[in-house]
Figure 1 (tube, rainbow over the protein chains, first blue to last red):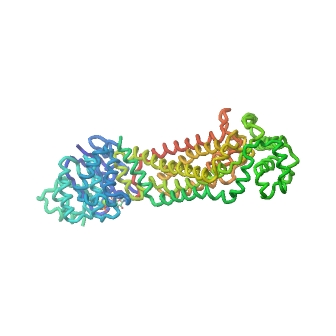
Figure 2 (cartoon, rainbow over the protein chains, first blue to last red):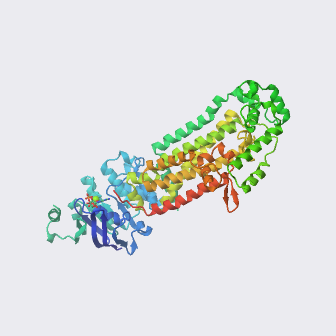
Length: 229
Length: 377
Ligand SMILES: Nc1ncnc2c1ncn2[C@@H]1O[C@H](COP(=O)(O)OP(=O)(O)OP(=O)(O)O)[C@@H](O)[C@H]1O
Ligand SMILES: [Mg+2]
């Protein structure tokens, strides 16, 4: 699968949040780096079809982002995602599975599998409002994966995760990246270093680096600090 | 498509888990019970028994003369004798204009003629077209004279209760259904919903269905409860009484029972309109309070006499306000909708209008919702 972002721009009243960004993604994990306010969330929202770009396009093998066909391929974890306080973790993931049009029996199995994967099986029947920040974040990760997405967009998925969960998450993402396009944003360079085969860096809405990072270029962390410091 | 059923169940759950919905449903039950009990406090058991004594009698000269001999104080005070003749006295005093008539001066024929003259006089006053007046004259022939007396206490309380219930259902729609769509915005789940495969077209329809189900089920439950309570407390007598004994100037050939069934059917279309309005408009405003304001604004507008009483399709529109259609007043509404020479009473025009409004709102809402974005945060 080839995900193509073509001269994508988003202008708010007097602020260009994303400025003519173009790139292509294929199966594998891509890290998106950028300082606060660089335009990561704005870019990802446009790639998820929930924010109309000012100009430019997003297509997956030619399928436009506004279509149901595209959404069927998509898994998305928003940065500030919400939940229904009265729902349990299991209900929430099942609900999202239904929203994604997954057949009932399959949805049920997948939900159990994912709750196990993110380590929430033993609290699956507890209401989400009783969860800690990191646990909520894991519910979010589970819902994004419930339709086995071919395009997985994760906006700061590791925020709030403890070191043990972070390692578990990394392994999960690396596995999914073998057969899907995974784009995830983060501020933590070490998240990316180990698993991202590909890197995108944006500053003030513009793409300043695209491609593989190899250590001949030096230390990524140092580069990041220099660019965004 | 069995996941639509799952979606539906979750949407219902979201509505019912809402504290406000739970409170409103309890209030609906309490008010329904009060609707059944409170009117009985002013019309006590003794009064009701007295008024039912004459059930089944024909209101002719024999009965009128019997009343003239037994009535006290020209029927004005509440003595046991007067209670017995209460309904007949009310019919005669309302039919014959002028406050100080001595009842004994009139025959049954005088009474029925005076009633019809008043009806026709009023039709003239509001300048109804000849076509409509001729139409009503035909319909009025279907009401048999002399009238048969049946005391209609339970059915009267029931039809009055429906009007109040509708106000509560409006409150229920305004408070609970405005959140069906705004909850996603407020909880920030809209990002996930709108980016899901079925998060647009299907979700829109499922949410509408869930909201409608809750409101229709509440209405059916509350009217059912009120009907049962009324039957238990006041008995089933009176539902076969003609509406003219309660709404003297009505031209409709209905029994109270028929009238109540008509009201209940129309009420379902009214609550559908309330529910769709609350849900669809909240998609635009993303704000429950604004929608509540609009609904109550429209309700108050209906209560104001801002349009003239004259005939014609414009003033007819005001008669289609739900608070007017679902009330005893609608029984003596003679204005009709005239579309290309075809006439429609408010009982036909109003449900069609309500459903039409609901459909138009549904279509507009789908166009807006399916293009929904998370702009502005
Ligand atoms: N609705 C909006 N209206 C106006 N400006 C906005 C809006 N949303 C975002 N912006 C601006 O666009 C820019 C990019 O914001 P964005 O949320 O995409 O940054 P980000 O890279 O995700 O930052 P962070 O690391 O803090 O999550 C910021 O300057 C922000 O102020
Ligand atoms: Mg962000």
